[in-house]
Image (tube, rainbow, N blue to C red; front, side, top):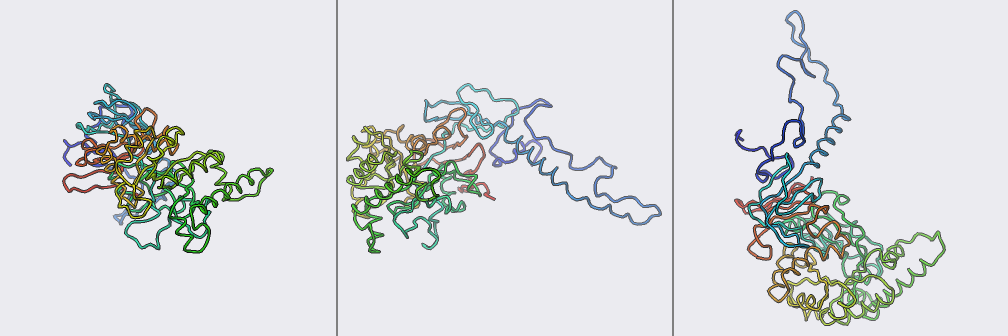
Length: 473
């Protein structure tokens, strides 16, 4: 690299940070580095000691590395890098909760420090010139099986459903997510920075979900909220699974019975005097009854949506409708109750009877009636990077374009209880940001750079036409 070329900032994708704002000597803006070696003529550590009489020099005993000092230096350097300000300038910024503008977004310590049309770039900041590209919050897919049902592998590797008992309230998705599933890289390519990973729909009560970021090697560092909800299923899936085993439930009424009995048992357990005996199933159901987490109800047919509402009224929990293929039939009821619908997947065939009413126009019908919607892929049912394309086609079929963007950003953030952190661009929120070559609702545009917590995790190389994710190790 010639002396005229700027040196890329450590941790940033090469060739993307175009310059650093000038910082006067002695002010923050760069990590101080120690000299690579001592001055000429000095004997540094490990140098050969001179020996009289022309004998060969005897090497000095190598010193053991001072691990405490090294660790402290690494911590100090990491802390300094975290405090460094990143300024993304000359961007068409779409905050989602607020009007778009041409301007700058400042990031510090993984959070949004400032944004606006006239924001001043601090001295010493790293500057990324967006050159007119669109800057949006990272998209959110609130219903996936990412990492639990790995792509390109045999069915034996799937950990989506624990179908050995109809009530599996206590199993946790977090215990089965593989962060090295290639689907996470596909998510980044689609501008998705957060997902909600659900257990499957084989059981009437399927287990606890986890909300997490889409890049990392250690799931504890990726988690945004765990548990983020308790999955349940009505309709054809659980009755098929257990009907084939000649067990309850084999019908829709049997499925509702299993759910009622489980909640009654949890209510009885909660009524016991303290200290109650530990019970993983009861503790999970109690979180729903105390309204600490939502009840994530898989259902497609309108009569199953009605059953979901009936059960929620009986036990007083917070209901979220997942899929909702025929939810538009009861749109007025759902809107009056304030019950959100996570609609999708939309790019599928009508592969079973309860999907016969599937239509890409349904999101617009629900939203038009006042229902708060989120759009989901149910990955790997629909590839996760097609999330935004589902929103685009829903707009073509009548969904308001602003609502479409909210359906893959702030609305799913609300469902997950994370809207104070993610889902829109505001000062203090997580710097989960995506640069797009243009309007993301235009299928010809693509995500060019993705940041999670202000850290670059994905870039698209136009020369090779390849997307590159940052190393997870």
